[in-house]
Length: 185
Image (cartoon, rainbow, N blue to C red):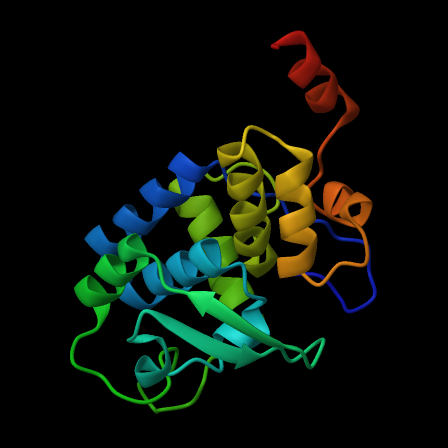
């Protein structure tokens, strides 16, 4: 967890590492945190927006959300895999998804504290925080599209970045990774 305005950078998880983490959290009856990881990795939403979600809102094939940071409305298609994960972890709840036993919506600070415990318990390398989920989504989209400029343009639109160069920096794409694209042609 970093202080507001500080330069702490979170790392993306490899996609298979994120999927493994979801399963481990489910196995250990940490369903809420399995869902937080899944929703973050499959939607690319910021944690503040994830915490506003309700079961009713995301139970369909897609949903709209007004992003807290940008104020822009975004439509998100719910992937079949995310639907499966949600079904495994729903437990017949209604209303807000990410709430404590007392019915209070979790805070970002609380989730980041828990993520530090999760990072230690499951041996996650790097700086794992709530923002890692959004970066994991971005890196996975970029890698699924063969590290293409087209995917960076789409991600810059999804993330509401001003330019794909901002997205490239955001995802931590290195000059070596770009060079490797040419070498592997």
